[in-house]
Image 1 (tube, rainbow, N blue to C red):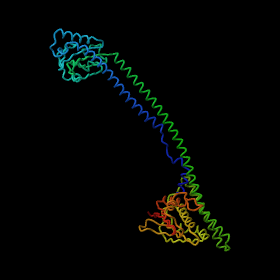
Image 2: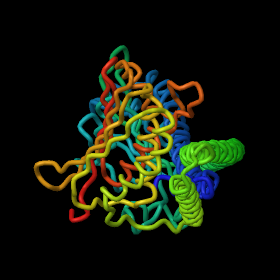
Image 3: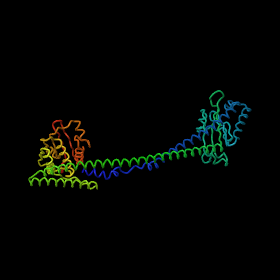
Image 4: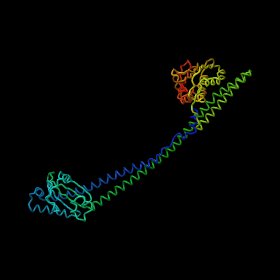
Length: 465
């Protein structure tokens, strides 16, 4: 099954990467939303500040003008209610001139306790306001400004402004009058104005702010979109290069696995052929030729499995008879063992079938047995044993050799692909065997002690599990 996975990956490497993330489409929607919301929020903040600042500044200029005129007149006595008739007439004439200024629709003058001392609407004189928050703010020393649209339906007092003022935008300013030489508020002057030119200037400023903000947002979005599109093109190019590199790497691994898998049967076939050439007994020669045919059949079966895997037609694991599998492996390597004067011993009592596939598992055992035979010197032995664990759910296969063994450092290294202690080795035998065993839910453990040989233990679940 591991061999089929390698072949399937080589054929479908480009598909394994998955559906690419469309960065441009994602940014086109979300980026536009983010830039638009930011631009609208910024423009709203700037226009609100611009309008409030210009209205406040206009009110401050009006307040400075009124204070400069009032300070030279008997203002303290007037607001205290004990001014002379001449002084009163002088101040009220000044307030009347304010009410006659262009854009002014009404003017009121309040005492420090909120009573209207003078008004361009005489009917309001003497009234006291207790709920006017802007007036209270002005009496506390601050300039209060309010703007809106004049409508009799909003406030009844707007009806006195006349029909020509209805529907116009107004500015209402409460301007504190301080006592000379102190910050004590003597009174407040309230001015209702319809400053059309001021509002036109504000509107022009608002339009300029919105135009500049939207243009900047459009330029920012276009720049970011170009950058994102460029980045997406680079990512796609790198992705294609990565797919190509992964495909080549997978093909290389697949070719190495095929080459390694073919070597063991070919070695057995060569050994059988060499023994058959020098053998005079027809019966033994026939046996050697039969070994060659069996190895050829094994190679054909492996190639067939690889083709099935490449087409995505891998078979599901089933029940594999471990004893029969090991007997076939020992028979396959018998000629090679005899040629190298190595005793190949099988101690395999009947054990339950394991959940695997005969072809891949057989190749895993071939790799392990071939490594063991190659590691043993002449006169040595390789012992293959089977057992069942205490729970009865796992079957153990142990392959032990009497070779020189490995140091702990080499034990760690030989588990890596393409690392081999043999001059002509590919370094794939143990790695492929482990991959096959793990794919069936099993484990492969390598134990070795320098000078005492090496043991490979495979644990696989029984087919009944």
